[in-house]
Length: 55
Image (cartoon, rainbow, N blue to C red; front, side, top):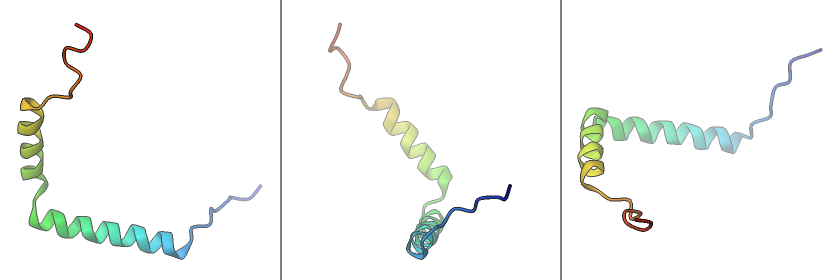
């Protein structure tokens, strides 16, 4: 049979476009390498709040 092409409303396409644009601007200001280092150092010292509950 034929190929089914899903309908995507114009508002959804615009939302996706704006998100991509915002991410590009954010990445130009804060390069991903710096974000990865900040997340890694935060995750290493952070806790999840679950430690010791079932010990």
